[in-house]
Image 1: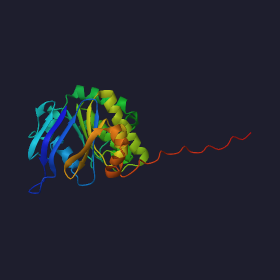
Image 2: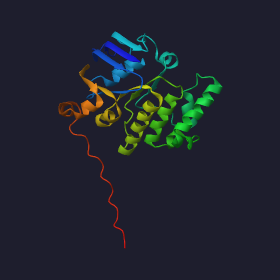
Image 3: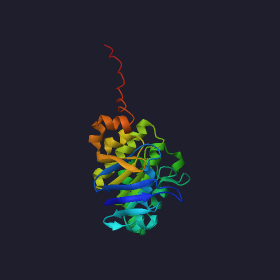
Image 4: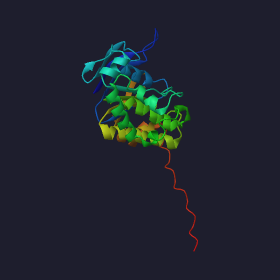
Length: 252
C-alpha cells in the first residue's frame, strides 16, 4: 500500500534530514514512526503525504510512484487522508461543516450519504453537529479531525502526533478510535507519535528513527518487550497502569 525506498529529504538549501529511509505499510495495519525530537519523523510523514518532495528515492502508493504528485491529488486520486498535528479543525465552523469540508469534491448525494455513515460511527459528534468546534474538548476535536479525514473513504490514513496536547484519558480514547478504524475498515494507517508506549500498544509494526535513519524496525509487541529498545528509545519502563479507585466499605 505504501512503500518508501531510500528516501532522502530536507528543507531549502539545508542538509538531508532523511538519509536513505526505507518503510513499508500495508492495508489492515497501523505502522508507527517513533524517535527523539529532530530525528526526521514528521519530515518522513510529510514526504509520504506530499508536503515535502524527496531529493532522492521513491514514495509509492498502491504501486504507483507519487513522489512528484501534489498533496491534493494524493487525497483525491490516490485515496490518502491526512490529519496534521496542529490546526486540524476550523474552530469557528460547526462540527458538521468541519466534516463536510473533507468531502467537498464528492457529488452532493454521495457526500450526504457518507456524512450519515460517519455520524453513525461517532455518536459523540452526532449529538453536537451544530456546535462550533471551539466548544469541543481536545479529544473531541481530535476525533473530529479523524472524522473529516474519513468522510472521503481513504485507503491510506496519515496521522501526525494524534495525541499531542491531550490528557491521558483523552489520549486513550483517540488511540482506541484509531485502532477501531483499522479493525473496521482494513485501512493502512501510518502515524508519527511521541507517546511511544501508547502508540506501540495499538500499532502492528514500528520504525524507530535516529539522525535521519532507521535505527530499529519490527513488530510493535516485540519492540515493547525489548529492554534495550525501552532504555535507548522509549525512555525507560512503561507508565504504571492506573490503580482502581477504592470503593467505600458497605454499611451493614
